[in-house]
Length: 441
Image (cartoon, rainbow, N blue to C red; front, top):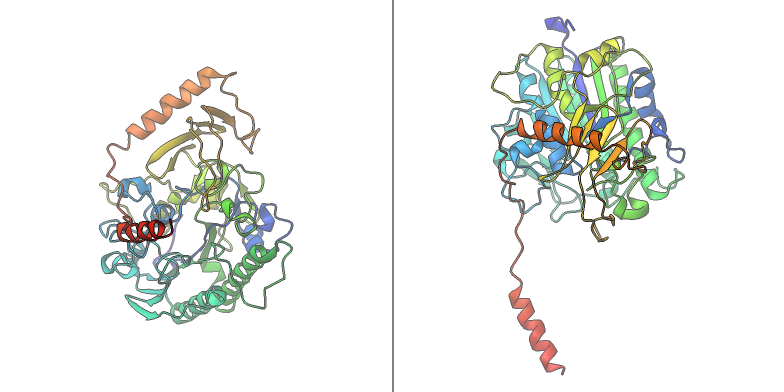
């Protein structure tokens, strides 16, 4: 696509946290109203088979910003306030490629790729940052501005509204030049909270209320872009970092027709609701049903603004400009399903093979999953992954297995997982508890 030097598009990427495939009206939710997100789909493109690179937060964000599998960076788990690690500063981010064309780059919201100085957004290509550096269910949540903590007083009910205000100020300040705004909401990750204006407004309890406030936020951004006369020169994308956290029950969202959720490589864990619009460029009402991934945005944005990526940079995503603008198709229809450092499945076209899983018991943070042998699913016929066809089609299983091994081998050796935290030594408390128990005998 030809872009004139003086008309580089503004780019706004709105990212929800733990939002499920079944939580948006245009993806089938009938108990949550999302008219503004639906508007993006109606006036642009809806992706019905769009994947995160991971069913977990930090890895998925690393993949989005770099176009690379997080396993290439050793990012296989989520970072914590006690983490001494983060996304390596040597990685090339979307923000850094946009700086080559003199974009102003800003992030508002959740970073979650390391909160120590060398890992923060300003060291990763962003000009400005405001937000919480990790999940708001973690200890010591703070608001940071650029590289500094500016508040320890974070009112959970005001997070979405606060981020929205910051996003609108960023747009207003930079509307006269090309900008990239990465608006990464903390919600609807637990603990859930919304302003009183949205409490009780949905038909799915607090979770639905929170999502409806997120949709309001999207609407505020759309209104600001429209009022600023920027709609015809702004690419707006909305997506989620991974599937719903089903272990949280009513607080965890819905995967709709999909199986599983966050922490799993069933479709519900990694297939995420995604829509995009660019008035006059993306055909209205487009629906793309073939595979695409969060990693595709990195090379796509590079192509749109005319940045040639270094030959030595390994990118796992694919330029999907033709999908966006010409009703085209992504060339590569394969996907490796990683869960942390483990390769658990592979998709090629309509076919998905899932490797054997020993199962796990339910916990406060993880839903129960029954053990299963190798699974073969035809996703076109069985979106909910209910019918295992491996016994009927053993040759197809073997074919996919060999393709998966070849795809994984092409990645070469991968680094060890970054250490995100280590357990505290509590032996002194064990000692005191033992003394107390002996005293009471």
